[in-house]
Length: 115
Length: 113
Image: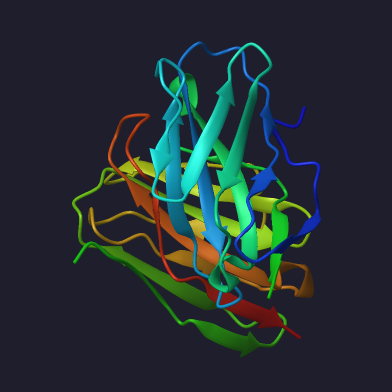
């Protein structure tokens, strides 16, 4: 079974607007961590934000915030005030307590920011 | 500066010609992994290592070998590359613990013709 599902293959967003990238996950492990990575066209993987399963508050890092809904098993990434440099592929990933040596990735969402 | 370094970054090779992609990290991390990225599939784990001399298969290990003789190095070996191993490869490292970030190398674009 797919552990991470990203249902939006591609999205367009206007510069300065906010965009939400969907991510749902599947695990029976009570202890897990959720990550978002950005991959620009140059290919490197850039860590954006982390949310632990026991964290009480939603994670935020600058213009990135994570809308964590544990009961729904969703961890959506919100990018506020989009910039042209935000155009990239975005991956949601999960690390489980019982298998913390690996990340399970979704298929990714391509975001294109329009001027 | 914390780094995961992979080489080569770009390589075109022929079917059957053995090649090694090197990976080195300077953060004294216990965990190291190799992933491959293919369109529509995200990243999939090939092999991982939890410490020196401890390695194990990930989700897609066929056609690959690894070794971990030193803590900092984790080379990926393709003994007899085939065209279906054409992919973008990432080495990654991390400390033990869920909340610790997994750091990635810059990626190695490999084409097998």
